[in-house]
Image 1 (cartoon, helix red, strand yellow):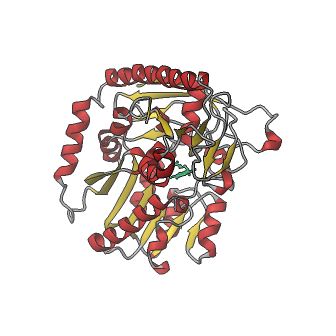
Image 2 (tube, rainbow, N blue to C red):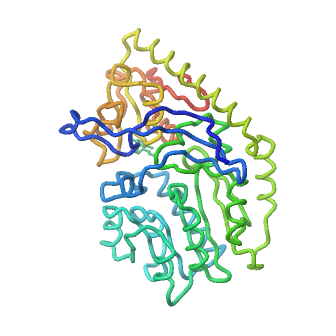
Image 3 (cartoon, rainbow, N blue to C red):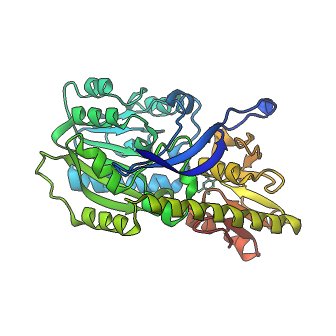
Length: 393
Ligand code: TMP
C-alpha cells in the first residue's frame, strides 16, 4: 500500500549534534526513504527512529530562540483569544513555552516529553506534563474539564502512531472544542523541492487531502485552513468533531484541496517527478559548491538546522566545502553537525573580510537573515540556497 518514491541515503539523527570529545565515535545511521500511501495519500518516511532516541532531555530546538517564531505565536494567541475565546487550552509539544506564555497560567496546560524544555516552563509555574501525548494522558489532564482548544505546532508530524494521537484528542475535546494543528505543507515542500523537510523527526509531511482521510476514521473534520510562512510554508488546520455543528466548513478547505489535486498530490507519478527534481537539485548544488571551492572562496553555513543535515548528508557536502556553520542556538555551539561533521560556531554578523559566501541552512528564515546581514550583502557578500532550486543570491 505504501510505495517508496524517494531515497535520501543513509542519514544520522538530524538533531544529534556531536561533541568534540565524541568525534572519534561512529554515528548510527538509518536509511531515509520516503513513501506515498495510495489509500489515504499520506506521505511518510519508511523507517522510523524510536521517539525516545529523538525526543529526550537533550532536545536542542527551542522555539523562543527565534524572534520570528515568538512573534508568530504571540500574534496567533491573540487571534485565537478573539475568535474562539478558549477557557481551557492544551498544547501538545509546548517546547519552551513560546505559545503558552501568551495565556493565563490557569487556562493552559502544556505537554512536553523533552525534560530540558519542560523544565523551562515549569520553572515559570506553568502546568506541564513531561510525557508523550497519549490516551492515558489525555484522560488524566481532562478528568474534570474537557479542553475547548488543543493546539499543536510542528509536533503531530513527529508522532508515528497517529491513531493514538487522534483518539486522545477525541477524549480530551469538549463538544464544541477544536484542535488546531500546524505543520509543513506537503504542497509547498514539493513546489519548493524542499526535500530537506524529510528527516528522522518528520515522520509525516501532511497534505490536506491526507489529513482529511486520516481524520475521517476518528469522526473529525477540517473546518478551516490558513497558510503560514513558517518552516518554508505550513498549513494551519482547524479541526472539529463531525458532530460539532457550531462551526461551518469554510470554503478555504475546498480551495486548498482543489489546489492539491491540481498539483497531483493524490497521484504516485507526482512523487516520482519530485524524485527526479531532487536528484537534479543535488547535482546543481554540488556544481555550485565545486565552482566556489575551486575559486578558493570562504564558504560558511548559516543556521545549522535539522533540515540542513538532510541536504549535507544526501549531497555528501562536508568541511572541505563549508568551513563552519554559524548558529544562534546555545546548545549547538561548538558542536559538530551530524554526519557532515562541520563545526558550529557562535553566531556573529557575517563579516565580508572573513566570509565570501554563506549557505542558507535556515532558508526558511531568509527574510529575517537578509535583514540582519544587510551590511554583508551591501559589500558584495553572497548566499547559496537550494530552495526552490540551487542558486547564488
Ligand atoms: P529551524 O529551521 O528548524 O526552525 O531552525 C532554525 C535554526 O537556524 C536554529 O538553530 C537557529 C538558526 N538560526 C540562526 O542561526 N540565525 C538566524 O538568524 C536564524 C533565523 C536562525
